Image 1 (tube, rainbow, N blue to C red):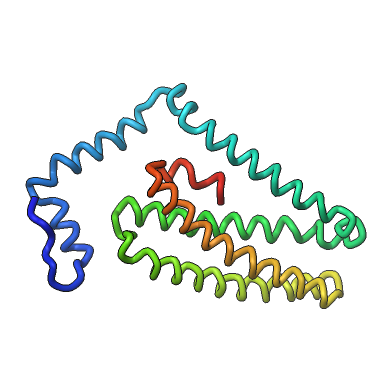
Image 2: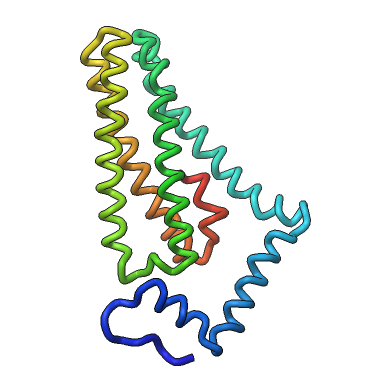
Length: 193
């Protein structure tokens, strides 16, 4: 197929039109067939593809539990941390999953490329920081009001800020790394986020 025009940036419509040039149609149909094959795989084939990544997820969850275990003496003294830790962990998981879903879609549609990767990573970092600030302030106010401890509000707010920032970075960098390594990021990213 002829190369795309070199002048200026390609719009999504230009890219879509380029993808539909006659020389590209066979390639796109082959990709669609590969994607459909994954949906028509047997139960056993599907399990074989997913179990290794679930095992990775189990290992990362156990690692996270061991880190929490290190702080068990602090948690025993301040039960409020045990109450609030799942909130921070849940928010981090959800923020990472949001970023991951957008990233996997952008990789699949070729909106995310090596040319714009650094700009998109910076953008997601900024989104993570701003989400962390907003949610961190919210959870800090709730923790302070609920337990009457301003320092607890500060600690949990900072934990939320850090967690949402790291989650956003992981949500974009992990799928990109897996994609670059030839591993399907839609299947393999989840356990790491």
